Image (cartoon, rainbow, N blue to C red; front, side, top):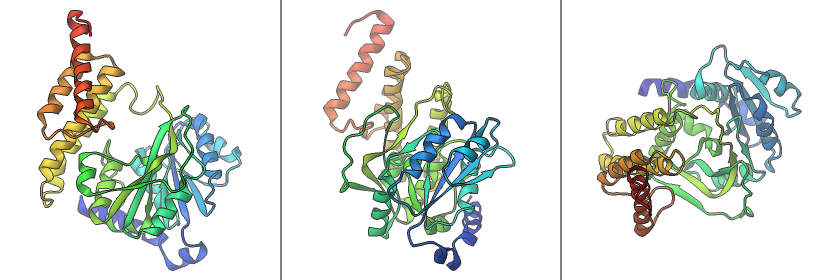
Length: 332
């Protein structure tokens, strides 16, 4: 695994040369947009980049073997960009790596083809990166597509996360992340052998050698698609994520307390899944079992912003009552 990451880091070195930095002003951002049969959404993503108040950027669209009208959409959308076609479908990790290796910016930003950014996103994030040299990657809050964001605070809070905090919970949504190219040269690119959590795994590697953070304001929108990659297959996605989390003590055996951090992370994931099973999927019995599993992984951290113990206990009570009502007709 380590050698694979080293080879991936070496692969982006040709783009990080003196001649590259001389061609572009310091702070240029390469926006990497992988797409696979997302032609009907891609224009919104591209236009959201074109509307950024930060203008020193390049856009690289990586078509990961689409069979729809992606090429034609890119050609006529009116947004200048580099279009690349993968010879075969590689998945998000392979597509993003292709884009990184074909770009030249000092910073790398990621955007999914069915999501979009708010206009001040890159300006705020690049300013934060330029202020703090130890900050290697920065994300932001994401909001649902149809939500109306409140006024964006130009002095918004930057929260920094340690490796231990990132083990407990992934704080970075990939379509919000901007990272330093030289940091990727050090830790390597996305692991193309992973089916899921390949982005989270990269953020963990970055948090080992520096700081990652998040601006506590909404700077990106995401679509909740019924035809998305994980739609209708949430159980498998959750199981793969839990499997990856359980692998962390072996991956990072040199980190003191790693098993305790992982246990906290498993508890948080189980409870988040319990809330999803109860509120969204109406699978109350499974929600109750996930809640019990979460409490069993003590110490019990707060998921989904339920920071106060009383709020968490009320949430547990709601799940228990819903499960009893579904099984026995017991009302709340």
